Image (tube, rainbow, N blue to C red; front, side):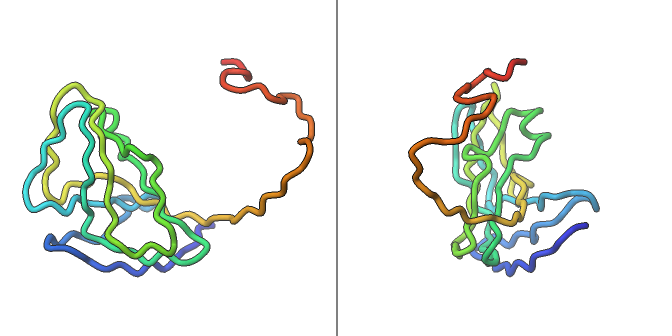
Amino acid sequence: MTSEARIEVCRVGPVVVPLPAYQTSGSVGLDLCAALGEPVTLEPGARRLIPTGLALAIPSGFEGQVRPRSGWALKDGVTVLNSPGTIDSDYRGEVGIVLINHGDRALVIEPLARIAQLVISPVVRATLECVAALDVTSRAGGGYGSTGR
């Protein structure tokens, strides 16, 4: 069963972008577009904040997760640097996407190009309790690589 959240969206800035959209009936991510007036070149190793031209009103109890587009990551090495980026429910400014080019060639980002995905997710607020010791598990303090390959 799929639940829904109503998200209010405002277009901001000089470039009119399409509203984020699911590309298929099974998609969980809404595509976000680049609100650029002209193409931008992202050199290998470079990172850049790309505007989306959108501000969102995410309801309390939800967050927006900004994720890379998988095909772009595979084909060109471009990803969202702080992935997943979080859009808090009380943020009302323009959404920007921090892209980084991990590829070996420059990439041109065209105006209105689909640059990232937005996933709306419910959140749980934790209450932290300081204790003297934690319960014992079979993994215990085993960290990176401790569960094998």
